[in-house]
Image (cartoon, rainbow, N blue to C red; front, side, top):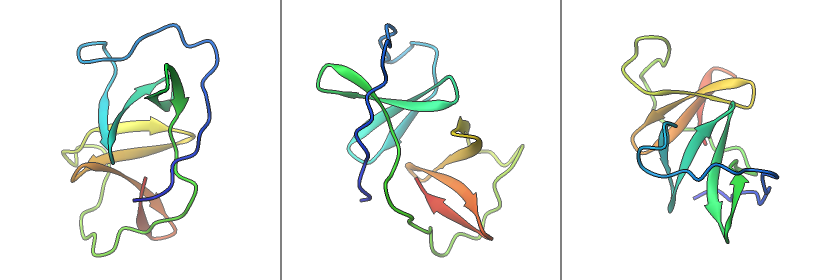
Length: 99
């Protein structure tokens, strides 16, 4: 699994959980919630911006993600990730990265 950055989200009064109205995305050992164009995860009593600190290419990915591909689209940090096989894929330089 890739390293996850610790980046607290300041002034986050909303508590994410099942049924909170935001897309829940499994991510390693936790769940991220898509909110305001980024992903939040619970951490030690607060919410962090969730992101990886390294580049991890998804090998052997022959599916093209896009509108209507059948996977949940999650706006994230200026691009769109697609939830696929329990993680997020993001297009990058002719391949997909695991986020």
